[in-house]
Length: 66
Image 1 (tube, one colour):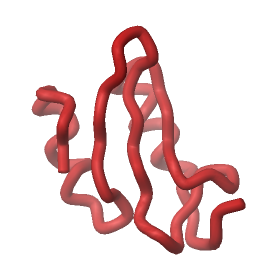
Image 2 (image 1 turned 180 degrees about the vertical axis):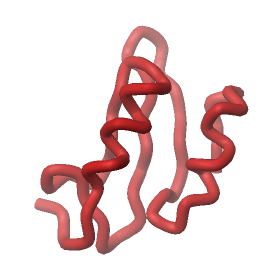
Image 3 (image 1 turned 90 degrees about the vertical axis):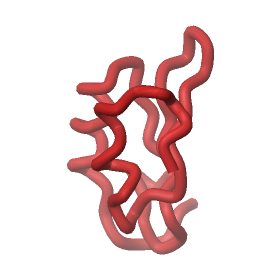
Image 4 (image 1 turned 135 degrees about the vertical axis):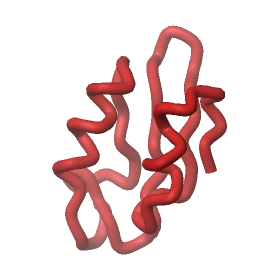
């Protein structure tokens, strides 16, 4: 689910690894990952820009979170 209002996240929101994407004021964008996926051990991906989020998603891997 894309809750950012940015169409540039629509394709990412359909990724089976993603639960939802949201924006926080002055804190960028967050992506909640499905159980069984992690980004450097965490259950979320964070980026200040759309491009940064997409770069971080390239590092998501299968496995448990910490």
